[in-house]
Image (cartoon, rainbow, N blue to C red; front, side):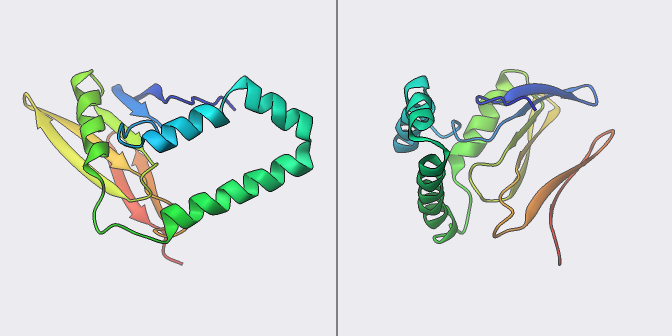
Length: 148
């Protein structure tokens, strides 16, 4: 598996697409960006290696619980505009499709620029919204929710 920490460019049926977790798409999340820089560097990885897998897993579980409490207990009634702004900037860079997921809020948005249609999707999350994005070539996207 190849990991793209800053997102990646893909071709979806001949259209240029930007896919990313989306955690770097909101410039106003400076606390998260600082935390990410601390967490994702060689010194932290060395410390985790030194601490061993048991302690590292305990710390990771604790951080995961904090994240869950922040993003899964207080829901917004609408998505943050920063993600649409990020998608719009990517459209201006030449991407026709932008797919993110960090906001935990499923959203679909289409924008017309100079007569061309551009697509932004935020997949949302599985835990609460049970949302996912289905792509059926050549050009069908469907933001859906799993019904049990």
